[in-house]
Length: 153
Picture 1 (cartoon, rainbow, N blue to C red):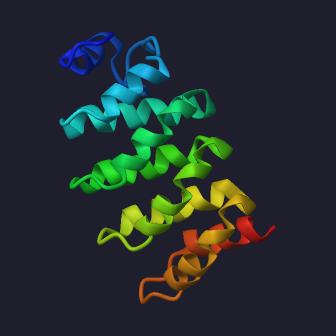
Picture 2: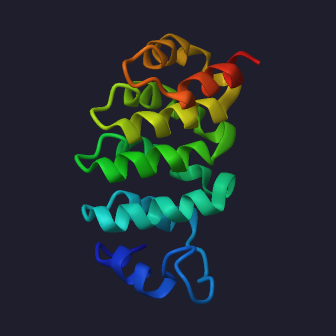
Picture 3: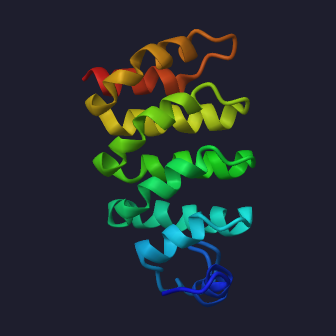
């Protein structure tokens, strides 16, 4: 079992994917789940970056990523949406939360949620009304239009 300070220790040992140097050893999905629930947004952001790199192998992080969509830090919300988009069908339980994120105050969060829903394809049928509304906003989003095409195909 990991101690509360373990996420920071993991960051020191594991590093962050794609940040120069040698590729560090990837954390387990269980370790990433702990990191995603950490109170430090920097830890959460780094964990989401790992999930994105690991893709479907990190499927057990879906509940923690779904919770991160409600973070008070917009960068954490956006990173959670991006990571969910990389998990394929395993992210299906997050469809309601991703649909809600289409109404986020931050455009980049809305765009990332639309991309993630599009990556889920037809499984995200329930998001169609929200995506249609998003695509009609004053700042039209090509991600919403692309997601609608993927979901309807």
